Length: 90
Image (cartoon, rainbow, N blue to C red; front, side):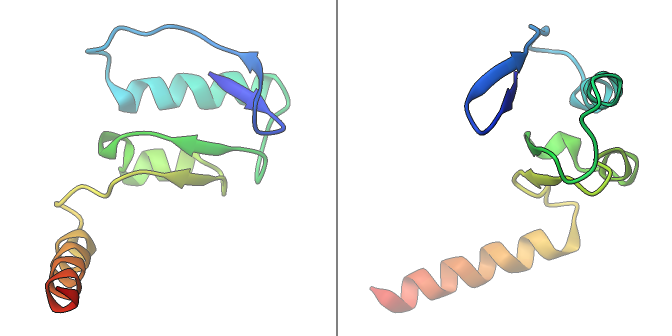
């Protein structure tokens, strides 16, 4: 679902739960460009499967929220740091 002004739905479509997030991002990005929605105009929320070099390029500078896959070198370090900090607070 694509929303304007944070909460007004302007576009939506259903997808198979087993559909590739990578392929969906390509389709959604193309649809958004056709609708004139471009750079710095949206926040994309997805699971970690969308984090690929090609998909990040498709985001065209738009922000995104996701959990980084552990194949990303930084993810493991950030989780370890968070767990260590949490343990020190106990």
